[in-house]
Amino acid sequence: MKITVLGTGCFGSAIAQIMTDNKNEVLLWTNDLEQIEEINTNKSNKKYYPDFRFCQNVKATDNLNDALNFSDIIIIALPSKIIKEVSKKINKCHINKKIFINMSKGIDYKDLTTISETLHKNIDEKLVKNIYTMTGPTFAKEIIERKFTKFILSGSCLEDENLIRKVFENDYIAIETSTDIKGIEILSSIKNIVALASGIVEGLGFGENAHAIIITEGIKEMTKLALFYEIDSNTILSISGLGDLVLTASSKNSRNYITGKKVGEGMSPEKAIKTTKTIVEGVECAKAIHKLSKEHKIELPITKAIYNIFYRDKEVKKEILKIFR
Picture (spheres, rainbow, N blue to C red):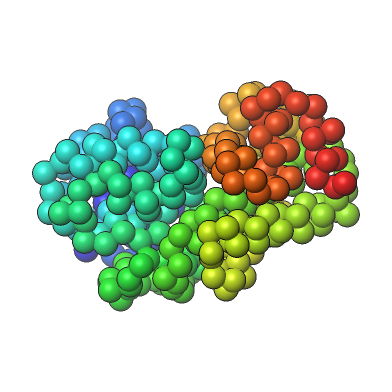
């Protein structure tokens, strides 16, 4: 089959590998002309993976209309903050109905919508067959290394489940399903905020006891938001809920954890974000969830602390200690 992947970052590249391992042709889309040249000429993406090479079945383009018309399955692996802009561009393209699979995590700050809601809102329904989200504890680096990974495929209906399984599943990729797409997207976003706090705790030298407290408080914040959004309790216990939280808030391979650790060690939030090679989604998410918590009077101590550190230049140690009190 032919597959389109929007995004050529660390995750988009990993998804392209899964696709070609499963004998699919892939067209990647990006606005980065140098990266397009590198992918098409050298089959490499040195910015993210110095020693990695794409299969010959991978090409790249900056023409969105061409990318969308390449396949009936469009995989979105873009930074969450640009998805609204890209979805509006999609709406202006001349395409038939497509299956959109969102693999990005985040919440729009302005209207507090999830990514699937943003796609539904900005892409005309005549261009959409179905919209799904796939998330889970899925570090791109381990996918590139072909280590076992499991996703949750979520959607209001799952009529394309068999097709999507055929495209994705292999010896190192498995899929389970859920119809709680809103819950999956909300909880998979929150864990990035907790990971920032967990990294800060490590950087401050607080130790394992404090780390356990952060994980526990993170689960509490997930539960509060689950109650607010009427999310199925099973979603909290899923790999996109508790599973993703434990991985992202515990692993030194997590970009949010790494960024938080730099801040805990004394680096300014601005520099910590700048020196992290990939997008730090937790910072943007903290802004959105803090806004939600203020509007609806939901007490979220970790979210508040991260917001105050990254957006209000508050003292790092003092803000983190407030979580523990």
